[in-house]
Image 1 (tube, rainbow, N blue to C red):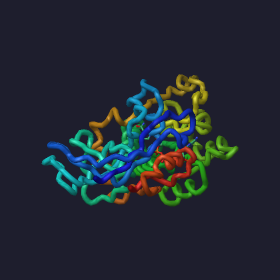
Image 2: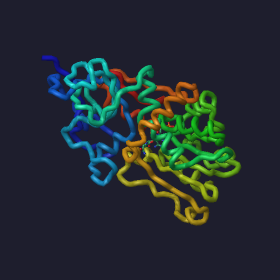
Image 3: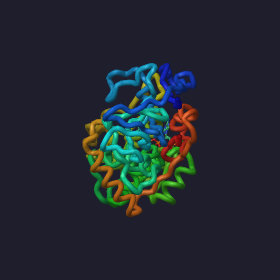
Image 4: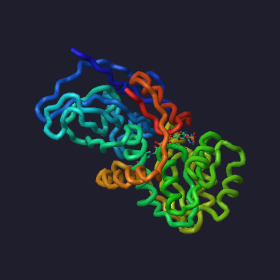
Length: 331
Ligand SMILES: NC(=O)c1ccc[n+]([C@@H]2O[C@H](COP(=O)([O-])OP(=O)(O)OC[C@H]3O[C@@H](n4cnc5c(N)ncnc54)[C@H](OP(=O)(O)O)[C@@H]3O)[C@@H](O)[C@H]2O)c1
């Protein structure tokens, strides 16, 4: 009997993700029963949210992964055996596959991959990063031409798409990144108006120069040292979409936030959001993103890792900032 490998969560990280929280197990490839099909996973998406799913917090938007279970992850795969009329062999599917090489599905939670798109584009644009960018920009921030938008983790999977879509709306876009290569990519390749490195000592001064008319819109992906100076430059009636706080995910205690006084003085709107609340909009957002992609309005880049055995370690790249684009594991 043929076997496959799966990554199981066996301990909860205290702060940074360490090797001992995962184990790589081998099992026999199962046979699909009536109404089921067997998926061979070809690509896994590694996302910052996985750090939250490893924690014991029962009060988040999704339950934690149970100790001993296969680690939750989204992925793309191909149906290689089927007893389901709607999913014949050869169908490409995407969904929460888990960090494993094979799985059985009855179709629940799985979507068919649109024809004609490379898998990298599917994972980088029309799945989680793209729908998050689309929802946060258009449903939370509601950009208007002439406004100034600041995005943190601006060269990342979500941030890079937010910035490109906002530019198409006539918005001035300033991206905050952690190194010079990313700063060059978002300005020279993606057309952002300015890029700032939050690691620079004079970040607040550079931010003031890059946002001479203040900040109307803030797409927050990180928290950390950039948050205070950006918050301080928000204009009256500014809007903040709180998408992610990756700078805090590995910390036992959250960073102290800015004083709330400016929420009153500047009449700010601050809204957190998570995409599992909006699954019903995924098809609509995916369609819009696919059209932008085909028209050449969205560029993306991927950071490819090879082999499931390297997936656990690769998650750490998201936290060091060493990923250059959407982090994907090819199996
Ligand atoms: N709300 C939702 O439903 C939803 C959905 C998807 C993603 N998200 C959130 O969106 C954010 C971006 O996700 P992504 O998938 O696009 O990841 P990503 O931006 O492709 O990768 C993460 C990036 O975060 C930056 N970073 C890491 N640690 C940092 C720190 N301490 N301070 C400042 N920046 C740091 C790094 O970029 P630099 O090199 O520039 O530092 C790193 O490359 C994450 O916070 C994620 O949790 C939320």
